[in-house]
Image (tube, rainbow, N blue to C red; front, side, top):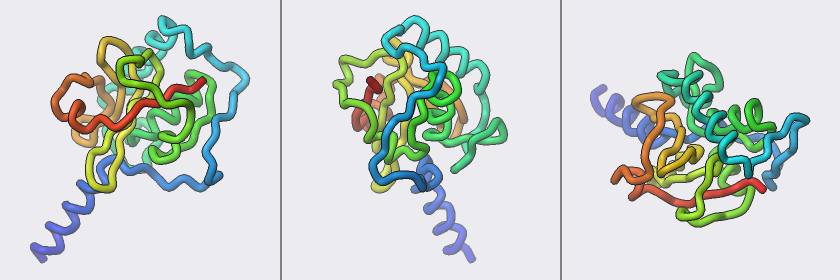
Length: 164
């Protein structure tokens, strides 16, 4: 019984931010909604992301979640882009990492997606706000803002993508 519990806990940790499976196209793309926000307007994007944080702060992590009862990292990014920014992006972290254009960490601006390798098979995504800070869902603390300078995130940083 003990081994079964240990194996179950390990599996949950490995899946920490693996999001719900994506059942859409194998070639992820971005659809434009009617009320699209200009992503080059960094002041407006920062306001939207900070408001999103205030609205979702303390909502706990739940794999595959998409509500205030629980949400995962790619769900928050998906929901924010869709409902606040006007872009219909893929739901999974894997497919989100393939949309837009790749940018260097030093070129980040508000709204860019930041990706991390948090385990052998797990990936994590958040949205850059400003001054090294990004909005995301922590598996232990829920929706929060963290710093790219934090040693954990600095070591796990993988890449960044910008929607054009």
